[in-house]
Image 1 (cartoon, rainbow, N blue to C red):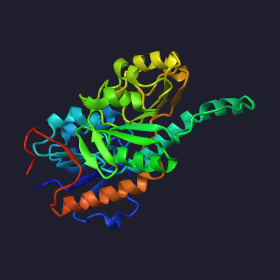
Image 2: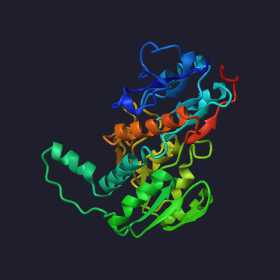
Image 3: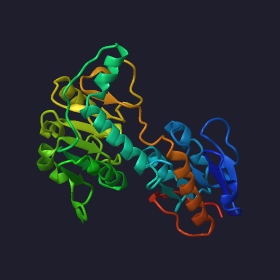
Image 4: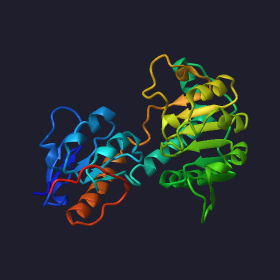
Length: 319
C-alpha cells in the first residue's frame, strides 16, 4: 500500500482544513518518532531545529514523496537529497518568510545607520548621548539576491526615499522597477552603494561571495546587511574591515553560527548582530499553516506540489 502518513512539526490549528485522506502525526524533531518512518509520504521538516535532528528520520523514510521545509533556504537538507527515494521532491517555503525577513533587513539597516546600538548601550549606562547619524533617505542600496525576499526588501525601502536601488540576482532581467544585474557586475556596482543587503541562498556560487576583494570595493563608511546565510561572508575579511573602522555591518546570520561567546564579531566596532531571527515572528505560524494546507491539498488530489527545489535520485519509493 502506498504510504499516506504526514509528519507535521506542530499540531494544526484547524485540523478540519486538512485533507482527510491522509493520516497526520506530530513530530517536532525531538524524542521518539511518532510512527513508522517508512509509512511517511509527506515530511514537513521541523523549523529551527538542528540539522542532525531533522535529517535523522530520512534514511528510514523509504516511501516519502515530498519533503517540505519551512525555510527559504534548503542548504541544511542537501546532504539528504541523494538518499531520497527516486522522484521524491524537496520543497522550500516559497514566499513564507518574505515579509518577516524583509522587515528585519529594514530594521537592521535603519538601526545601524541611525546609531541605535550605541543609544541602547548609553541607555543601559544612564548616559544622554546625542549624535549625528546617516539617514536611509538619499542613500543608494544594493540588494544581492533579488528574488522574493529581495523584492520585498525593495518594497519597504522605497517609502524611505532612497536615492536608488540596485538589484543583483543569478540571471539578468528587466523588471518594472529597473534592471536586475548579475554578480559579474558587482565590481562596478559595489562602489556606488551606501548599503549592501545580502538575501541570496547559500550555494557553491554564493559561499564566500563576500570576500576581501568584495569588501574592498565597498565605499568607505558603507553598511553590509546580511539576512542570507553566514557563510556567504568571509568572517575574517569582514572583521578586518570593521576593526579598521572602514565598514559597518548588521548581521542576522554569522559564520560560525551560533556565534560562540568570546568570538571577536561580538565586540567588533560598528557591528550589530541579531541571532538569526529573520523568519521567526508572529507572521510565521499562520503563513506556514496556509502553505501546508495548500501543499497538502495538492498532494492529496494528486496535483504537483509547488516550490520544488530538488528531486531524489535514490531507490524507487515503495508501492
